[in-house]
Length: 474
Image 1 (cartoon, rainbow, N blue to C red):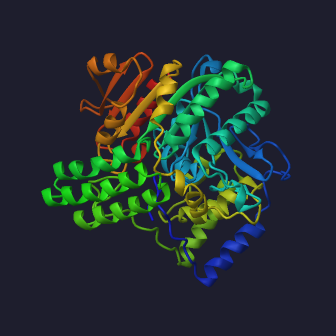
Image 2 (cartoon, one colour):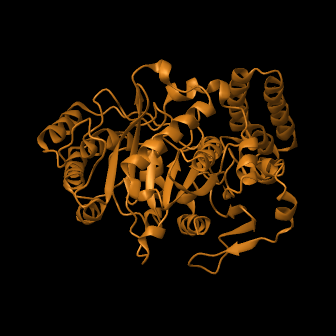
Image 3 (cartoon, rainbow, N blue to C red):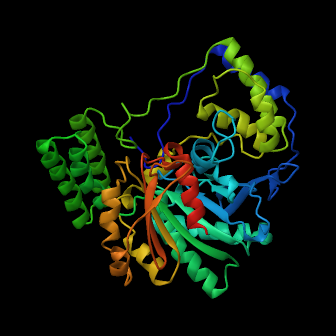
């Protein structure tokens, strides 16, 4: 099953001696941060990173990780805080968003060029509870609808500001990817109301919806025509896909939302068959993203142990960069193994019962009945209240395609929509004379079209993506 905003990984089964080496590596390394599980905040000695758990409900523990910005801005109080919400639902922001997309280091523990830490403090939140390093004491505590997820996130922010009151006056922007857009849109409304009521001390900057699953049906109805114009479907295929989407819409009209989700899966399978396995996240990729290969050689494991040790023993990502650059070789741990060994040991607060996965089946299943519902009305509320809303979309994304995004934007009841439509797009450039994208702005709504990028926009077009994020927060 595919998830929105995160590729499902197959856990790697390592050879016996590899398992032994990993176990030895974990046991022999002395933890570099002495932290008790009850500590509200843990982190590096230089303060460049902090992390911890917030109990958003009794038995529901939400994990967060904050990176201090490397920005050279003279006025540090103006540096924004960027809260990142991954898709899925159940995709790990700490694993995927941080190490694969915008964090200071990539999944090979190498410094990332155009990391968003250069323009903002980065706050990754494992959301909903049950995702990544977040966990619940009992499966019955998993949220089953978008409002419950957003309420948990609001409670997280209330408690987080208590832990870091110094951040409350700096502008906080909620950035989201894919299904995370549904969370961000409703959370944004809740945050606005809480700030207005005085129950949340926060300088709310706005919401950014990236390749967002705001209106599932609009996205799905765009698949056939979009693939037709890109030669991945013929006219007969377009008709066949539309008929399958019509069945999804019928389930929605009859209030059979779980059936609609199951039909969504069938439509995806049909598209894959008719298009000869088009990549839903980037239509120009040759195939769907493959699973990560297993590392089984003793040489590779030896190198990884050295790299892991230097990262874990470092005081922060600045020192880690220097240490990792000194290690030769290109093979690295698969992300699932990296998170469950190197990163777990660095953090020192993850319960032994919690195993990191890129995407949680349990979280997705709990939200099956809510998956196909749209949140266009929440975006309308944000715009009506004057909250800054940015929508951005990758040209090559299929699952949350640009045509589908444009379709739901045109359904907004916001009074400024007519004025927005009349605006002329402005081209975007980044270290090149070639066009990197376009932007259209009117009042508190902006729309960014990013070229040569798919669903994982920061990966495919990192320079333009960073520039876009900076413009959104300016």
